[in-house]
Image 1 (tube, rainbow, N blue to C red):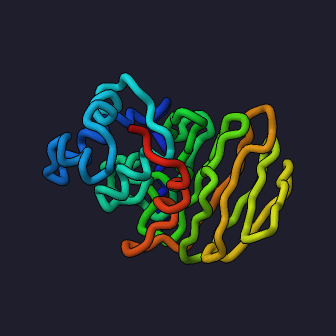
Image 2 (cartoon, rainbow, N blue to C red):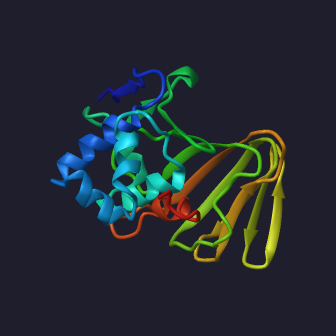
Length: 209
């Protein structure tokens, strides 16, 4: 039997605002109810839905948490999920944020317990001062720039080619330690309905008001 391979056919950047409105309505929430659940203002949500503001990663994570969905839901396309997904570099789905971009390398993949991302961070941006913990393991591979990870009391400076693998129940946080944008491959596993490490991983910054 031949395996079905689906190349990514959508190009450009994901319309986060339209996707947010779609998900909110699917959950039967008014924008005011959504604001209350996410602890964001009605004005902030309205600006995002109308494409007049780009959410930070933390803001998007608060929205995802309020809807009880993983952040990858903002990248999903309603197509039958094949067992293999091939992505061309210039056809990758990504979302712009106030301090960088998040590209979903597993968009369209069949049910899985991992979430791979290509993370681009602007200079000195990161997860915030508060440490985070979640189940499973976390793998990071630095592609460009310098990425500083703090795990418990230890710090690790990742430069191009360096990698880090650790048990994610250990308190950790991260930031771009360079004066130029940094790019890294991030893989979170496992991903479950009960606890999605992606949601936890990007909530270190307080939500925008």
